[in-house]
Amino acid sequence: MSDLNAFRGETRSWLEENCPKEMRNLSFHWEDAHLIYSKPEAAVWLERMAGRGWVAPTWPAEYGGGGLPPEKAAILSQEMKRINATAPSSGMGLTMIGPTLLEYGTEEQKQRHIPKICDGSIRWCQGYSEPGAGSDLAALQAKAVLDGDHFVINGQKTWTSGAQHADWMFALVRTNPDAPKHDGISFVLFDMHQEGVAVKPIQLISGSSPFCETFLDNVTARRDDLIGEMNKGWTVGKRLLQFERSGIGGLAGANKKKVENKRNQLADLAKQYAGESEARIADQGTREKVLEHSMRERAFQLTARRVAQESQTGKTPGAATSIFKLVGANLARNATELKSEMMGINGIGWEGEGFSDKELETTRNWLNSRAVTIYGGTNEVQMNIISKRVLGLPE
Image (cartoon, rainbow, N blue to C red):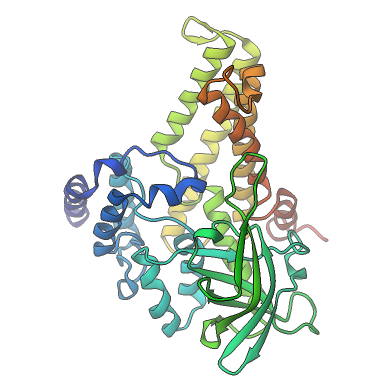
């Protein structure tokens, strides 16, 4: 215990001294992460945290991680939350491909790719969905042909989040067109900065363009950047999706302070638009809706925190991640719907002098939230997984 107390004291002092004030108390949507992390203060924060291996604190030190045991990683997380420090890095390198490489990568692949994730020098994007293969991902047709020591890839990927900012892509490609559709798929990595890669952002109804179409014309991937076995990429791809859904569902552990702030903001918004009486929401119907949503969100937060603690002891979430993805996505969508509903006509403004900046932001968040129940696996796909792999129901 004294060792942990000493670690906490050292960590607290180091964070207070080294975390720039500009990297504290930040709140931003993941779509804008590239703007936040392009700031000079963010580069300083990243360099300092990477120097200690704390960008990926539980990953092995030989790859640039911190090598911390679960107890110390939990203390680091608590101390960062205490000063509301922003994570020094984010993205699919840390949440998706990094954990997958640690599990399925060769030693050479780990040595080559993971340190660049840990120091934040490489950004990643995901090449899964295609125009004809979304929820039915195994129907993908992007083809990769082995030619000596590299693959030649042709095809198209869509909904490639952040592709316009990415340096590398991890992708599922078809390497055996004659095999059953779940077979004949391989998992490869390739450099986005090469001839033949064309990225086109997709304008969404919310006005943002976080997703892209990515066209691959004779793009090459090294033979030694095949992850797992040839034609067995479906297994690797499914495992990565579990890591992805853990992140989307909130299994990384919710920041209690931020969750409480969200609940308070919802109540304050209700008082502003539905009226306030004796320090509470005046309208009974609105008050009940806010209370119900807050209770569901609190229950979800506590459950996610429990499962996150279990995962720190070595128990890896499996198909149950689909439960968190489903519930978390619905909560996010319902929160924006409730805000817009409480604002009435003020909650459906797109532009114009008749609306405040907050009201316009609420409308765009409401429109954007429709995508939460689709990306990372649609609600319908998650319910199928839950029924088969969690509940054990017959097909």
